[in-house]
Image (cartoon, rainbow, N blue to C red; front, side):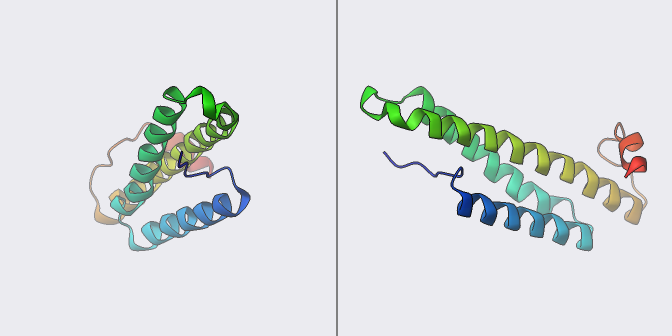
Length: 112
């Protein structure tokens, strides 16, 4: 059974570096759709890992803990990229003088 194991330290570090670089690129270009790319990728990974965890055969029970860690890491990356999307969207809205998608986190951005 093939598993895209993101709980591996090297894979986790590479995904984190790629995510941070894409967030930085989106912030510099003031384009929020760039952050959507890793967000969609992590959502697809989450669906894939949950599907694999649900349909796990008895022969592969030793993979359940790895898949559980992958699902937890997927949720963490989804949270990071979602809040980054809101942040970059706010930056883009201020730069273009348009309405942001969601202004409910204005108090949070002012604290940063």
